[in-house]
Length: 234
Image (cartoon, rainbow, N blue to C red; front, side, top):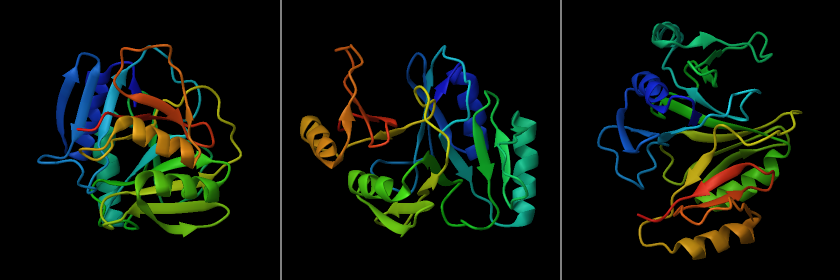
């Protein structure tokens, strides 16, 4: 997630999720559950990376936060407002979830009891034009299981059936510019970075040239042009 102030925004999300906070280098704030060890699929961790670029449009990628009941949902919304979140209107109308924005304007939703066994993040949601095509690509890219696929949405989850869901929602919005929130893929320990990049390209990803040779990761785009990073194996 790009951030004008990675430390401050990381502090908000760490308190919102109840996660630990660290920093691998200046300008980067890392969040993960206490005791988390990759590649445990119980969580999708968050990295905040400093960026001077202003937020100008609705994010195409956002997180949904889980609640265990309607009462818990109301308590969570109230606590998030105390932390600095604000109500947001993205044209959702009368729905059962609450749409909010973090202190830098990034939209997120607080659900009710729909997803009670995911941890604090219920799902990562991606706007797209073709949920079926996105489910095909990301299911193979991530080794995740496709739980549902239809013309208007698709739902994936880890093969171990734990942790948050990954959802693709059909929207009429057109992608403009780089996404402020994107997915990072981390190969399994012992994997070869070049081989993994080749596998993703064979699935339909395209390489993005940043014009830099000093970064250890690779930047690619999925079939709809959403940028994602392929990190170095740990």
